[in-house]
Length: 440
Ligand code: C5P
Image 1 (spheres, helix red, strand yellow):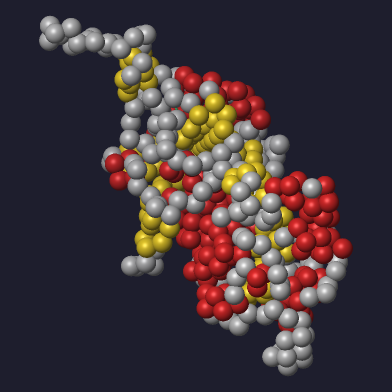
Image 2: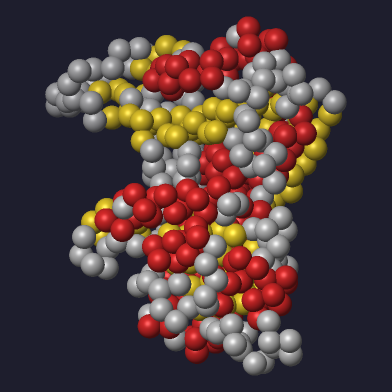
């Protein structure tokens, strides 16, 4: 079993149709829900990462936000205001003496209109200014002049690894955070200077996701969610096995949505080729027995358990140690099977689940009569909420339709991207998780 602290990359190859003909990467769809109609002041301080801010500006506007760019003199060394004006569709501000403003106070006017100020890149020098409350040019002046209770300040650090690790820089970011700024993460890897390490600015798609996440209500704050996802693989011999077509996408989408909604999320994943949602802890497993072991090792810490995994019902009774060879006789190997443990039912019967301290959610993939089967399965598994979907219509797809069945009846979540459904399910969950469930 391997514990991976993976990072999330928005996957541009995943597309979903929204608004009729428009086809967009899934990350935009989520961002659109949170950012449409928002007004973002995008501040650029000096750094090579300014090239990523051009793409961020584009992504923000595609997500439905209006973007007002403000640049420091140093930022203009890396990116022209012309480019940022073209991408944002608005005149760029670079000076506190900009006479275009009737009252000659751009630092006041710009900050009063904003739903958030995002500094990307935020250089070591710029955060030093913020930490000291200095205000000798437009961008820092505007940060200090913003209504601190109403206009959040998000910082996307970008610098060389030594600069990032320097105690003064760390001290300055800590001070900025203590003064109310929200400091986003940094990327790891090769840097423009040729060195490798922490301090790169996050990629534009990651920043978009983080900015959208910032605006997402934290309806699961304080909860620890454990979720299974993907298929299992039951070995026949060292090179063969039995598995199924589950892609894991629905479970990964729920994990990402729950993280965005403020939960601490542990994802127990069968063999799938999906990136780990950023901030989610992932435990990779292969077989149903390994999945049960991983779940049991984590379940005592959880307040919510969601079983989306397509666990194999049976496994070969005796997996061969060596590859089973054809012997030329034409005889086929005789395989016998034993039943796998039912992970969900096992957890649902535990004392914490029975007492209401752990809220359990099951999934049912059916081919027909979804309501009848899902209703019966909810009772059989002993869970308060069962989510049904039509297996053949959703396995491997980027969209799905869900049927929520609980003791009081059922509710449909119509066909939508799995990302969107993950967020809808999290909202439903937040309404249902009883107040008595321990927020750990
Ligand atoms: O019995 P069935 O496989 O249809 O039940 C589906 C639900 O039970 C899903 O939530 C699935 O993750 C869970 N399950 C499980 N362990 C099994 C079989 C199913 O946790 N061995």
